[in-house]
Image (cartoon, rainbow, N blue to C red; front, top):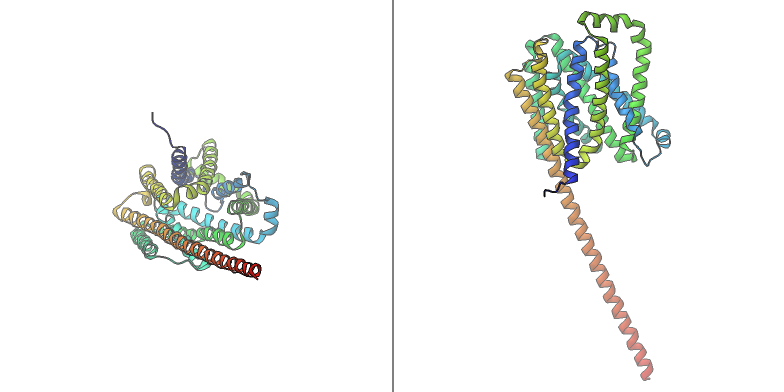
Length: 361
């Protein structure tokens, strides 16, 4: 009888959720766009991400969420503001250039996060990490060159997506920095970032979108022939998918490691790339696969994987050095204890000898 490894099954399921949510989110948003319900000025399409982040607060935590908020309110506000900028720009960029091009650019998120950590926490890169960054940069360059003939809107969308990805990476390395410096609980920080981000989006909706509802929401849906109940289902699906991805993000990485996560992210990117061509090529030319896009995607993903392997190698080296230091310290401690015992034993012998001498006298 074959025995099932529960940890293996759990890790596989979590990685599957991570991969599925990673490619479903851009595709669902693309369908919303083609229904006319993702008009750029409305920013309704950006709210599901903040809703998903806010739901992280529902996960039971040992740390008091109220005390946490009182103590770290300015860190939360800073991260919320940056997250809103990054999320808005990346999603607006996707709407302009299409999910196929978007996923190539957004795949570089890992590298931008690493560069931020390098600056803020003075982390050192090994040769594989540096090589990975160079490869990703080359892949992004190929993507930009290949899009010159795609039209002004696509080029602007690429630039907006790239800038938004860099802003989005700031959320990750700031979270890591605050955790390292202040001991900030990363999941609770994520939850409050979502709450504050949702508040900022709601203020925008009340101040701009609702007063221009007909122009921003109704007219684009009518022009595209969108169906309201389908749009409602798609937005609901987008919230669920974002929730899945947020859940997987905080469970997969600690359990399966950065290389497996990098492989999962690469698989998601490839699926988005292919599905964008199959589903939307006839509706938007920038979604169609060509040789340059294939080369660009492969180069970017190769760079991300190279960097991920570099992270693991650096961690192993660090762990090895720490182990040697521990062994050296432990041996030194044992040597000190042995010498101390020898000295104690010698002192006892001398005392006994003195006693004997006294008795003899």
